[in-house]
Image (tube, rainbow, N blue to C red; front, side):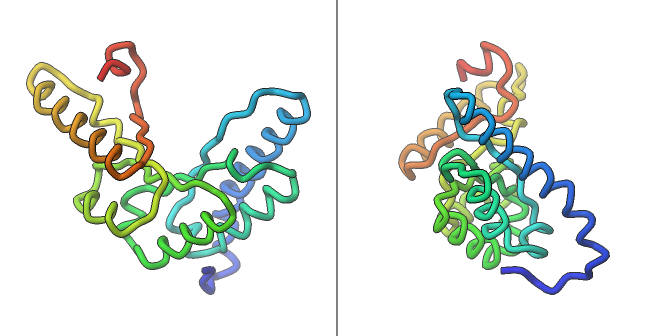
Length: 173
């Protein structure tokens, strides 16, 4: 769903559309080179969702560059989803209809995460990087929370990604 938006503000969306296009061009080029392709995620903001038909724009880019939709994933922040769930839910349905997976970014950074998970049909959650930022004072409790979130994601058949996991210790969590 695209909402009427002042034309002068559309310039702010150009960088995101350039990034989306660049990602699609890169995937197309790599495919032409015979590389083994893996899905690439692009960020979509609430402002994008309110200003343009994100699913149509991304679908058009996939068509233009002959890219399998499974190779493009969309990340929408948890706070954006909380901002206007009805509009985001419609966008997610439209993205899914085009075969594009949707990830809830920064999971655990807003207050309504669990409630949103029951109402929003995302394909994966990305744990906020604060989850892996453990120290001696919070490690025991933090690990239990991470284990619980992983178990919940498994039960909901959602993939899970830990943002900020950069060391061997982090990957062992």
